[in-house]
Image (cartoon, rainbow, N blue to C red; front, side):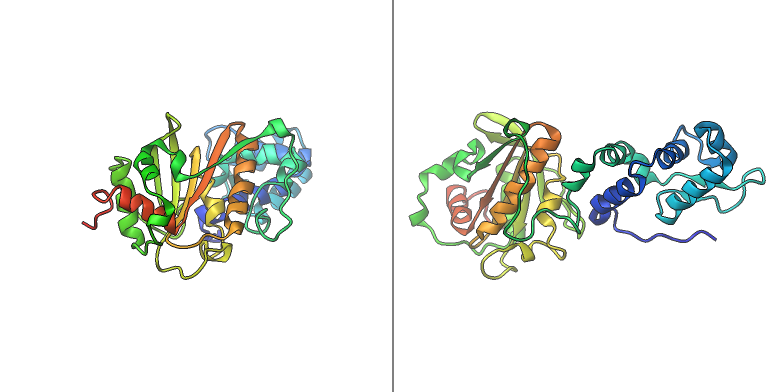
Length: 298
């Protein structure tokens, strides 16, 4: 009987990819068996099928298939196919096969790949050594964003921290960006709001927001960023150019350091400019004052 594997695909995604890459490592035989199982459209591959594809002995195929099975990277057939043992694909690894193989073949790339156990964000000694030309990141404020141009008229000294509810601020931001899509909050989300309609320095870009409402108390620090303190990490998995965290109070500099670290990694990995920034309580209040109609409770 096949075991049921219970997982959180969104929350565990990075860890599963990294683990698969580590399991494959530089073992050419294991990679061959992995590729054989995931080759083509056939659901199941028998041991004989895998032997034919890999040109490996039955013993070696069985050894490597058993290792992949034990790590839940492939699954055994619940019944023999034509009287022979067989293995099948797991959709998650089908979708992420190329990235897994890329990491398996590049030890340094795997080392800086962020996961829950290796987030590259905790502690004061975050260090990513990359050639200067390998990445390009830019820290921005709401004053840089053309979509929020009216906020430039409001001086920080004219307002106090806003304690607006997260839901109301989120809906106001949707109206401000003319975003009509539906965005439902749930535990594994990568962001609270995604839009391709933000204008930054006269250029239209994609933006991902993470909102922290009045339910969070005091200064915003990393441990308040989700149950596993991984909301910033998940924010950067969004297909966005701009990544922004908004909070109705003070935002600690450690949050900005994490944003910078993940922006650096994403820029180097995807070879494009990545923007990041925060909207603290004062800037939140400036936005609300500049656009009272959009942020009015409805």
